[in-house]
Image (cartoon, rainbow, N blue to C red; front, side, top):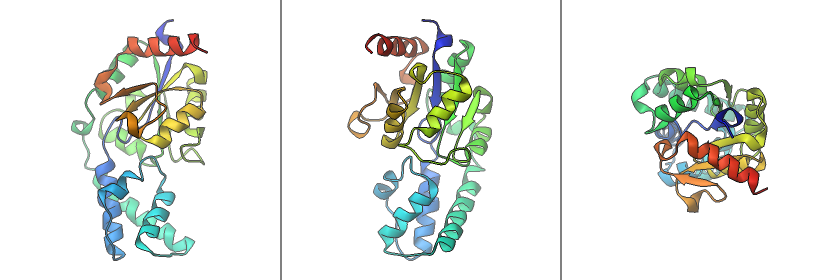
Amino acid sequence: MNNSTIACIFDLDGVLVDTAVYHYQAWKKLANSLGFDFSHAQNEQLKGVNRMRSLDMILDWGGITKTAAEKEELATLKNTWYVDMINKMSASEVLPGSQELLEQLKSRGVKIALGSASKNSGLILERTNLTHFFDAIVDGNSVTTSKPDPEVFLKGAELLKAAPEDCIVFEDASAGVQAAIAANMAVIAVGEAENLPGADLFIKDLSGVTVDELITLIAHKTENK
């Protein structure tokens, strides 16, 4: 199997860069403005969840009811604060191994897509100087359903002109791992096995895997069908 027969789809937050801290700070600021607090443990539950669903969960935790119009205003306010924070991001915030793996994939002609729930992925990639690695970007602006629905990854495969079974997804959220499995793709989890059941391989960060290992992973999955 040569490398042109595999394609890679990366989640963004927690895989390539860590914007979770900024989401946490912006959601906490919103919760505080509504008169209640927001914990790190609660923030963990929002991983891979889109903005409006996240807001619903936070309002539930705070015991607060809002109209649809009020929710839109609150989500916009949170996003304004978040965008202000990520506007100050730099290439120094790219997670260990990410730049190196992307460079190796690019040099070997492997097609690369982004598959993220973020509506700010373009800005984040630009600020961290990663945009040029991607052949396709699928994010919260171009999909209608959140993970664990596989839409984001299936659309990524389609744009790369790759069969789902030839794709490898990199994810740090349980909903993302489930979405990749539903899309019939191999999935590498960045994180602990107990938090991300069903993944094919578990790594601490992207320095934990090579291009050759990715090619072998797809070959084994194909053989074992």
